[in-house]
Amino acid sequence: MSDTEKTIKAPRRIFDRESGVQTAKALFHQHGYDAVGITELTKTLNINPPSLYAAYGSKAGLFERCLDLYVAEGNLPADKILTPDRPLDEAVADLFMTAARLYARSPVQRGCLVAEGMRADDPQARELASRYGEAGIQFIRNYIWQYEPARDRELSDYVVTTLRGFSAAAVTGLSKARLTAVAQLAGQAFSALLRPENI
Image (cartoon, rainbow, N blue to C red; front, side, top):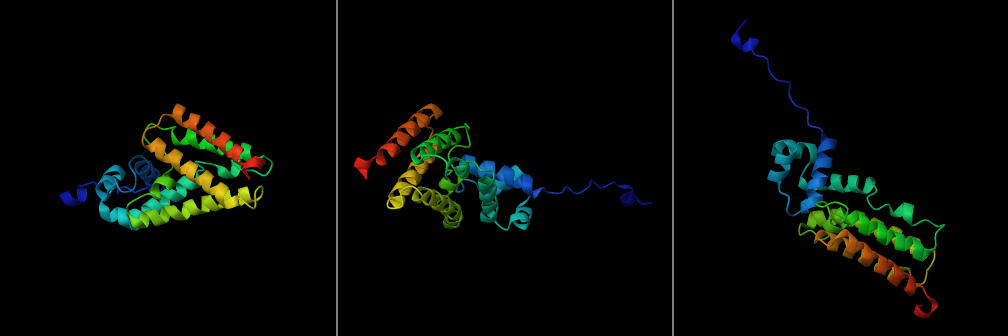
């Protein structure tokens, strides 16, 4: 038997694509899509660039998988908060407070991955995030329409703009205590908008 035949080769490591998505999601959430390059991704995932492209197609393809996972995990479970058995102002106030707590929960992964992706410089990433964002916007508007069909657009615009503001504030470092205080005020403001004198 030759020396070559005697050499025991280490088994080839199998890359776990699902685990890679989890890791990349955390990276994108912490730094934002634009700030994370291929070099950082491959180093963190412990793979080479060809393996990354083989697994996900592209950086944008990986980001899309991350967005899909983020939404599937129900990071802001609007469908469980905006339910038909609740008064509109109560449900929206709960949505604001839940978002504020979630967006400022982590010291590093702050804000909403989808909302921040919609502000990315990269047009492809922006488009991908917008697809998920638009679905959420439509859900909120449909919910409000059940209570305020004549004002669903303006009220849903208020809710969505407020949520995006929470995300941006969390990313820039506003504390959880201050953000939840703002959420409480936003809920009170929304309730005031529903009063007869403001219609």
